Length: 254
Image (cartoon, rainbow, N blue to C red; front, side, top):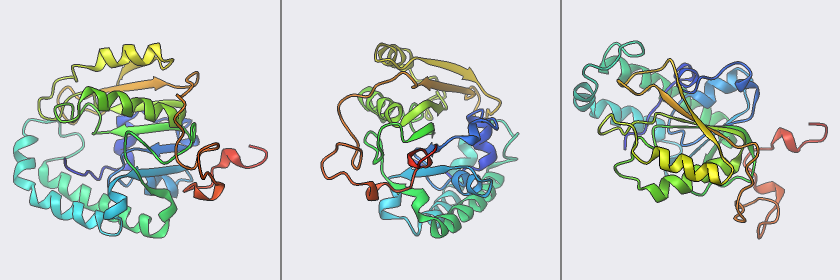
């Protein structure tokens, strides 16, 4: 799996983010070395990144992504042949952009470490409804040939647990084949039965041919199962201090 370093502009296009969306508390999961949270912070957006790599490669992840992307140049040239050139002129342009984004990420994780939390699906270190909007790109469905349906089900429910309003997942095609994930409709049906309705929308972002669909989970009426995240109210050993970020919605008057 290639750790990516996409930009704030790409996130806006991939997830159809409007100005009102950016007024919400946002989680990027998994975030990799994307510059979304860094660029969002410059704009006053309350955004947090979570990724397993922040546990072991926190200080060097941006540099590792730079080196790995360059190392895989020939593979990227082959894989992206015939893909849309609206975002990247060619594979070398993608490498240049990802390198710049990774450097922005490196600077921000050093300056604002509390905004980058170590964690991974299907169990995240956040309390229920910690965020208004959760974004997830290029993991679920993208690696549908490697991650089974049980993982997808658990991950989707976990994202729904921490999202007070919506979860948005992009893209819906399997990376290896370019075909929509075959278990999508089945998973959507199961989630609907659990109080998480969903819809599929087309977005303006289409780097990979056919990869222009977004899954939106509506979580406002969802009541999570009994499992509670570490640090959540009622969890063993819970304490306010373990929250990685002091959430605005927990402050008086909000």
